[in-house]
Image (cartoon, rainbow, N blue to C red; front, side):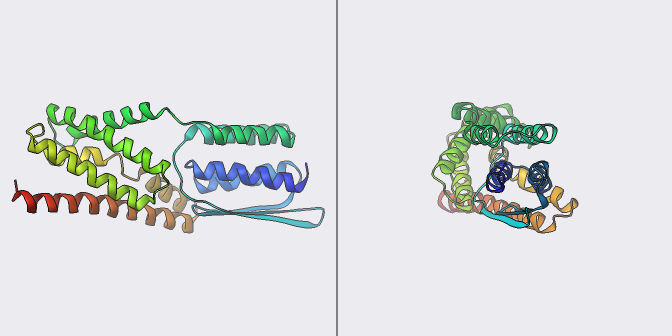
Length: 254
């Protein structure tokens, strides 16, 4: 395989992993394994959540590439399929055309249907609400709010809205929806419904990867992801807090 081709497939594999929630160590290891499988020397990768740098030496010449990452999501199926390609390459090197076709297919694979994701958001909010002290009535009322929250998240992602703006907008709307349902007497414990719905926005992936990357020695990546998690938490609190403050001031504390 030509060095330029190897650079292209290793960069694409790393990009798919990083954009779908893989930890830093896994991404770097996959890139290096693919390069070393095809006889490249001094294969090295430096990955952070916002960028990727890789290089190797072939026939005395150095090859390198820099890629900028914008946004990430969670798709364990894509991560697993890229890892499978990496393992198969180590056992038996594959031709460039075959690997490239598989990687492009993985990259273009659709996630779950929007309807299923929206329904899942409703169930998550419904089941979290009793955990925070809500009644059965509150849990049932949280279901449509959770669906609304997940629907808005998907639409904002499609529109490529900044994640901070997206979180603030979504938390504002779900808080307002809960307060309106409370006003109509459909909710007793407003706080439980709001918190249960906000769990959909909690940055669990960012927190988990921040801890894992830090423990693994990737301190820069851990700090970046920890900052991302803190910014999301601030955005959630800002959206919900401002909405409740405005509601209380307008309604006179009711």
